[in-house]
Image (cartoon, rainbow, N blue to C red; front, side, top):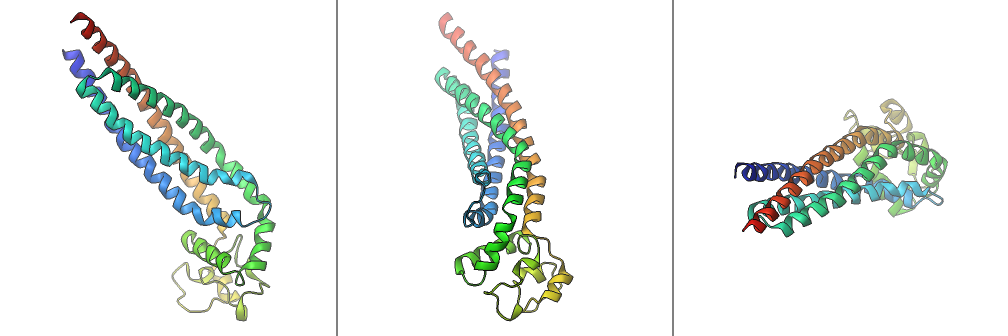
Length: 251
């Protein structure tokens, strides 16, 4: 009886942690999707963009899916332990095993993702700058996309404000406001080249790499930590599954 009670407590503990971890991963996935959406849209508008950049979207979907499933299996594991349902425990074990394998694969992709994105973004640098010079100010959709991206990421252009030089769509040599007012020391309605030079706002390319470098190790670490908990949860669920079966045969 003491052993069975201990196993149930362990199941509650592991699944409670898995449930909370699932909520955290789901939140990170949603954030990554929302935050990367504007940049993904820019990349999609560039002819010849490397296919590797589609990983931005797929990783966010992977995190959202894994987080949602962790919420479900956390609830499923607790119910299986309380009701002593072998069917629920076995289902729990199979789902956790599948997610465990998916998370390991996702963590490996995330750890290797930094170099892939850096190389891919570097390859399309000239194409991005050319598209800015050709479309910014003259294409409303493209212009809005860049304005939102620069506002969200606190950046200016692809590399810096010089990307907007000789852009036909910009009137009276006025640069986008994000190139001047991100430090909070400029509240004017016009952003000139001189003010942009003094503001020295970082380009969106460098800003994106900074965000990736800062967040990928955290996401990968959380995934690996959850994987360790899942191994423990699978072990406990199988022990409890076999014990319930032995008790049923004795009766």
